[in-house]
Amino acid sequence: MKLYIWGTGCGAGDLVDRWLDPASVTAFLDSDPTCDRFLGRPVMLPEQFEDSSDALILVASSHTEEISLRAASCAIAPEKLIYVKNNWLLSDRSAACPGAEELPAPLLEELRRRPRLVREPLWASDGALSERDLEGDYVRVRTLEAICRELDGVSGAAAELGVYRGGFARCINALLPARTLYLFDTFSGFDAAEAAREGRGFTAAHENTSAERVRSLLPHPDKAVFRPGLFPATANGLADERFCLVSLDVDLEESTLAGLRFFVPRINPGGYLLLHDCLSPLLPGVQKALRRYEDERGTHLHKLPLCDISGTVVISV
Image: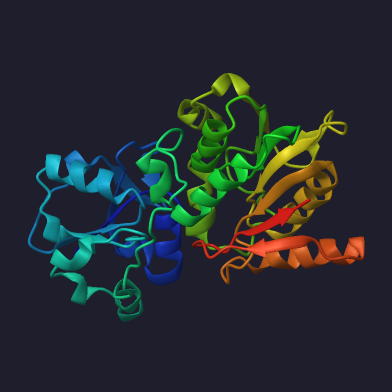
């Protein structure tokens, strides 16, 4: 079997780390590639895919509608595609693929899990957020929208620590167009020492970004302040800044703890901090950091867990 993976982000990295040997991947496909190789394998445009009877494409991106259209435009047959992330879609796009039985058994079992439909909330608007924004993690993004509606009387800037490719930052910028948005990230991957125990697919995926890529996604880039480098050094000069909303998404224990120490005391009353991956069994350091921070304070924070994909915990001030 010639196995291809569509995507070079976290989904692809997680797929390799958990179920596949990189050597078993013929190539990675990417609609908008930023590198020539990923995990030691070539990266190519979908138009460069050469079909054969034994070829199979695992779609590791959540942008399933966009990818299905791109595949059709490249004359890639639907039965060649298996969508790892059906997420909140009503239909299972993988049903037409007959080649899945050749995949490793644990991965095949994961793909057989039934997709679930999340209904559109009555209050949802058709304005700031696009369908593409909602594809990655519907519950998380709609929760962000609901929170932003509650910030009218709360002063302060917005911030994200752990920007990665900018998908969530784009949503914050779209929903809070009048607020300054501080973006803290190396924009080149994790601190090597802190991420030494993580899988290579996981760390390589986070290297596949840049500040320029993030800026190109923002609907109001003039409101964004980029702070590249390792946190908390990149917060120098902001000791007196106040915040209404913070997204904390750095995956690892020490960086998460540093983010909590800096931001929680600087969030204005009525504001929120969204701690991503807090309930994720794949990233236990996030919850450990939260427990350590609460122990330091000698009190529990006001927390609300979400049933989004990675277990965000919303902290209210």
